Length: 55
Image (cartoon, rainbow, N blue to C red; front, side):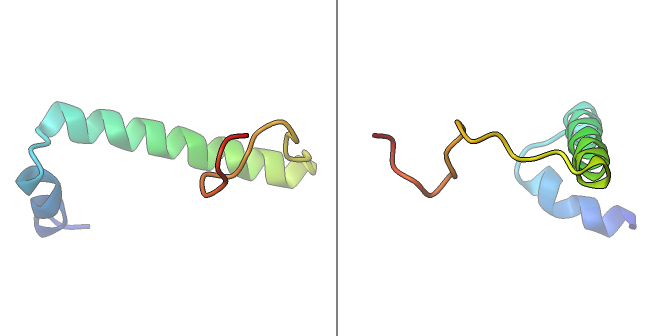
């Protein structure tokens, strides 16, 4: 990563705090997904995929 990688985020209006917060949330979900995968956690069946329309 370089400062140039942040330009698109800044062009969308994100400041340093917003970039930091997004990085923390994205990193947390990445970590949790890896732990769940490693432990063999099954996906919850009551959650629909993004592309599915609600019933």
